[in-house]
Length: 472
Image (cartoon, rainbow, N blue to C red):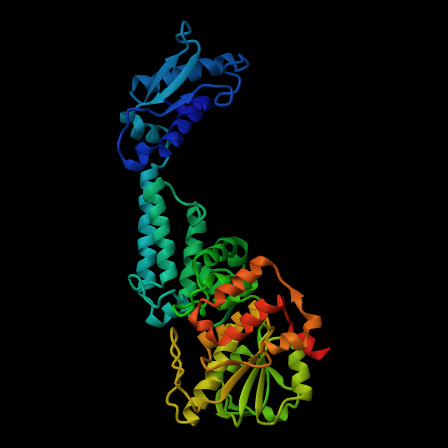
């Protein structure tokens, strides 16, 4: 029998299998008293009830379904007194399920799910085979790995498996249904874990791990970014950070999120001004004291250089570009290094600050680099201080906490005293009750103890203050 001679019969059998795959019988792997059925309506077989279906197509439709019934695949229920002329319902026979798949040349759902589970197991094995440093790309919530995987990857895989177990289908919101798209997404996640903290351009990342420079952008980016937003946590949302969801608010742009995981969409520089002396890989000496108004270095140069000298009294990070330029031109002292942060410190900026901190820790006898991902030793009483000047608001507080969590534990606020809110009261921006609630939550978290006076000042005045107000 060739079902291809009856598209209507094929459609009915496919709908029966669709309903079977969505049934509790399929999910549990057990037959039930209630069988899967399809009502033969106009929506199921257009023209059948109304009489518009071609008579030859109608006869073939009946003949094919009757043949399937004789072979034990289905059971036919005819309208009363319309035996052989008008079908009412078609029931799927439990013993005929496998034969129906074979007849339609349709993959069995259970086989598809088993293949996917094996695909995930193979992917997990590949990830576990990476050098341990690769796991640092997936910063986890508790610094505890699950089965050797970065925790966020483990959560993702577990949710896929749980959905398959509970629903008996592939969760399309978590992983693509199409095998080629799924393969590309898994390759992208593997590439993320493999390249670690090394920053790669988006097209180079795509060519290296996906086989073409535009594959990531054209086929993978949407699912990949959605996966990161749902599971991945920023580096500063480690175990000591109890409010990781707050940080997600500031990674709303796709490009920023990709930059956080080391995939650069646009070129990034590190901008600073001060008496830094560094040695480049080729042996040249870069004396930054020669640049009165500062300079911007390519991230590759920053990563490759070795700090030779840094005679500073303090390091100051400034969030806003206008304030940075004004301070460099009018206020910076010769023994001061000033860096432009531009919001949350980028991965490259964090690496730059760690490098400075490691040099200063060694120079002051504080010992070693002093930096360990997942926890920074802050017992450095002699270490040069990092001060941060940011907006006096919720975001400014989180930005400084990000510096403390990932680059410089001793970082302290500067020109962010609550008294500034009174001094510049005419420039305050009022906030909503939801915003007030978010601020109040910070008072309950120990890691924000340094910010308590500012938070209380914000709650008292009912308004926030941007850095630009200092320049008016």
